[in-house]
Image (cartoon, rainbow, N blue to C red):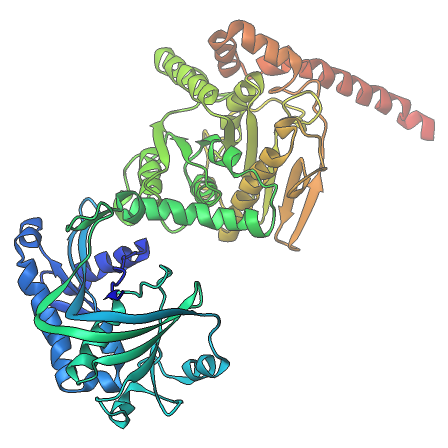
Length: 581
């Protein structure tokens, strides 16, 4: 018993990158032009959802089918059978919400074929595989035979329409003995040319090939179908909601993450990116060092960066400090730095605080204001994981050093000279020293009565970049060590050895890796200082601000100085002039 030949309907799949490109073309090239645009098929981009809904779908597909029919009439399809497999897309792109409404049409000309005989083909003959491999893209899917010799469709006239036409068709469908819809237009074209008896060989590489002997029973060129159905089997458009993917901010986030993940995938599989991203960083100083440190932190994926500074952008700043522009002159540094960082990467959580850090050796002049600044500084340090000391004066780093040690925070210090720099991590325990551990005197006022040449950090422009990048890389290495900031000097991590201090000298382009122990009489991190800070808080700080000798007395440094002076005096007495006479 014979039955009619049925075809499997094509299903569209659109990669998200198509809509990404489409949205860019719509914005930059197509704009309000809604005429048909050629791709491998064609796409008609409509400007409103109402226009999309109002389009006459029946007339649209009829027009598309008639173009194929005209190509059949002109015999263009004999030279280029790929013209039979045209497709169209109508689309409306909501570029604000990144929603894309689209509907595929695969125009199909109507002809009905009766199956007289069917059988499976065990394997595709080698001669057929070889023939298809040498065909160009226009003819790749179809061959005909004349006396068992293969030809392209352009040689159709070699076969008498009264005879049975033997053709071969490469098919991607995997449904048993049901060829894809793309065969329908080919068979309709052959029927139009008078070939109504066909021996059809359907070749498949993913499933069984088969052979059908078919006869055309009806040719209806007025009936044109082909709108794609939804997964529920209904006629209707599809919606691609790609807001989370195509939103430029999301794309930026994915690109940043991908760059870091490539490091992990290709170079260091053990790299913990999450611990870096989740680290909350406080930058005390928003100038040259602060700007470059912030940029490097962004590169490593840090998402929460807070700036503290009491200054404003000056005319000399923008050329050396990349977070500022000429129009920022006069604005608060910390606030502008935070906003600039968000312009670079909108997903960063950056804030700026205009705050004057209480400094040892600088007497209290407005206790209420300075105590509020102290309380705010303590709160900021408590809320963050890592503290970078990047201020342009030495004494401004004293109080953050004490607070950071007290709350066991990771403290990274970067300081500049003309052609030298220091990058170090402060010890959390009592093993590694801090910035002040090599001092023999407490920090004092270095800012009052400065001459003009002392009012700026006089340094070679490249020194700040070197120190900033090393400071950030030091933090990342700390985070990758299992002991974190408690790691000893020069211990191995997955990123190499973890130093305590790096001192660089551009005079001979040399970097030294040094280690110094905690000093028991340090005016910042020693035990007596820490205990006094914990017990007295602001009152301790106030005493240190008003009395330059207070820190030396509390830390025991004054007693050490007295002993040293006494030892020198004794030494001089031992080598008196009389002994040499």
